[in-house]
Image (tube, rainbow, N blue to C red; front, side):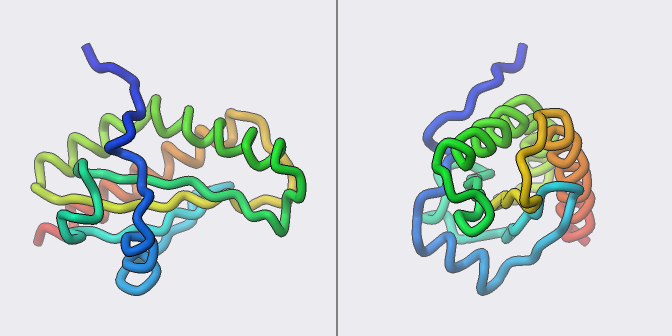
Length: 133
């Protein structure tokens, strides 16, 4: 049975890792979310095979309450649907650092965020498998 948890080891906190994503990484759009990621990062950037951070721009949402609400919704969608991505990363012997950014200028319900997360994960899985060759 899989446990749907989001431990501290999966959280991306290092400034070096964030700069690595923007210097060496790629991006993709998935509905309401934008994924910034870098594959095969140095081991000291992440404790697990997938480290993730969530961002909601202050420019679009002035109130911290709104930003925190959206980040909670993104974390929940990640927590529930991360297992397939982790399985593909483990099978291919890859590691990943990931920044997920919320794009719309208004607050969405949970379902569009969840659909965007699933769509983004499927695209990431395809890119991980294609990078093997």
